[in-house]
Image (tube, rainbow, N blue to C red; front, side, top):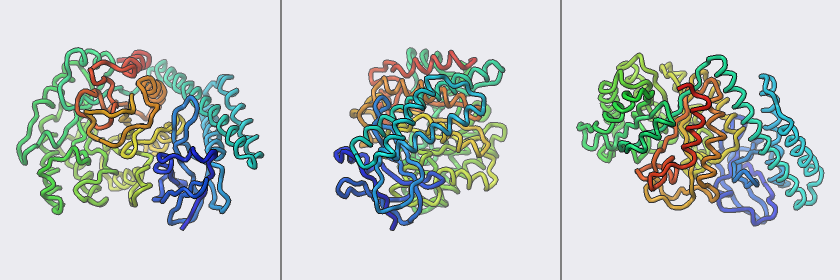
Length: 491
């Protein structure tokens, strides 16, 4: 049994959320199943292997909320590591490496970024040679963290602005900006603001509401949504056709939980009926969603692979001219901290592609700020690193995003008990959009960014993740998205 120890000063900073969300990852940045415990003033993370690892842990940083930060690669040792020092060291190394990479691409770096980098380095240097005084070392480490994340925000904004300007001035297309239309039709004011903000829409195909009774399909809402999109010349993504999520599957399907062949037949019937109905009316099919996390129908990973492969093959056969996508949830794979899995998200995608399936692109679903079941909050350079990692497949990427605007109970949210941590407000949702969406669109491999929850006053997955509040009033994040479209997208 491998054990890694981390000292936290003062000890009252060891919160329940920190213990529940901390994890260890190796070179591939995939979480190991662990057991976390508090012994005295130390956080102990236990796993079945003994090798070097990076610790990932949510950590409050003044001016930056509570992002999940990571250390550098650490060896196991009996003496505990001082956690804030190692987080500062890992963050500063990531900042310096990213700065060097972007400078090689020709990025012009401002004096403000270099000044923040210098400050972060000086604080870390002092902390690293004065570890005997835990209080002072912690203080200087956190000053280093704050300066490093300040620099990261400035650096990513500079990269986004310069990269988007180069692409726009060169006449190269920039990705689409869209949102999920939800399960009901838009009212007139909402529709008007939608068209002002977005040039694409995702039409959800919810199996539970589409086929409430076996063999009987209900299409009025989806028919109207697609007609509305065509009328207003929006690019249309339809799906996921198969969402591996308990809230999306019809109740009657659970009668066949132990009969995989029947489940496969029912999925095939759904795909065939849907694709034949909307063939020629959509611009891309999202064949399957949450394929790596969907713990439904007691399906094992091999069975989920077979279901996804079937949706792709059948969609391709029925509509060979329209791109097909597969969506992966929680790409950082935090969920693997608490369960064994043979296929982390990257491995799941790699397995599908090696099987020769004609997948046109990959979608990453990031419901940021929610735990469990969502993506832990990350700083902007970590977000960038995740996009770069998935780009190695060489396929177009789509990003499906949402983030909360509050941390209290949400009566229309279907996922209960996963409230985001305190500190999320309408202003912080707006800041998230302003920081992350331009960076994603600045990546040539990113074909589009979709906000996956539009309205809080309609049933939705994650609390307060919409762009319209419970009273149907637009949130500041919506106007930020409209500004991004006006500045960077031609249409």
